[in-house]
Image (cartoon, protein in one colour):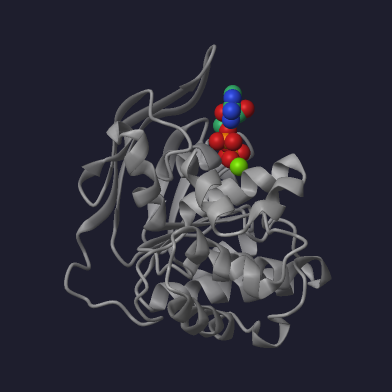
Length: 280
Ligand SMILES: Nc1ncnc2c1ncn2[C@@H]1O[C@H](COP(=O)(O)OP(=O)(O)O)[C@@H](O)[C@H]1O
Ligand SMILES: [Mg+2]
């Protein structure tokens, strides 16, 4: 596999000693890394307003017969900040897995910048993933590596030039407020710091879209607020952000677009929405 070859070629063979789940994380991160080494800057406003993501009658069935998404049609414009809410099992993670092509739609089309990603060839998938940063509830950091190395990892995997890495990693660590922890191991960080590290890793390649699947699920409410503020700041700089969450208070305070799912269907889609229990 291409990732493994790169990891070994780059002297990352030590990863083979990591537990299996960490190795899987490493493989995912490697595929999700960035090559768009432009500065941490606000994007141009040229194409804002056109859909960057379109779900067109998307259905997802997990074998044998779990209907996880039943006919989802919606558009997300470039530069939007969107909350995806809904009870456990509503289909939030499935929508996210389709976006980074962990899963394919069973029917319908999912377009990113007009391209049907359900039909991508296997070798095209890493290019998609370089344009999408993903953050998970459980962080998925390489625990025994430093903060710096965790954030540099996607760049190393995409064979960025050392000079670029040395420029970009401190810039992103600064943006998430982790400069002073660059040499700490991931295990030495608090939950909030681990999540900021994961966000830094997700945006180091300057993705067009940042997706977070319950990024505050394991954090106390103040720390959660800090994480969401960071995502809002990333959005303010021009990245389209999609956040799946259970947090009523975050959704209610921010008043951003809310897409509510229930049993795989969109039951509400509001511009400046509130979290309502009846939607769940
Ligand atoms: N890999 C899978 N295989 C089979 N069923 C799955 C799988 N992943 C999720 N599901 C089912 O799909 C539905 C939607 O799940 P999910 O997208 O994880 O919801 P959420 O993230 O909103 O909790 C649930 O019924 C869940 O049990
Ligand atoms: Mg989920």
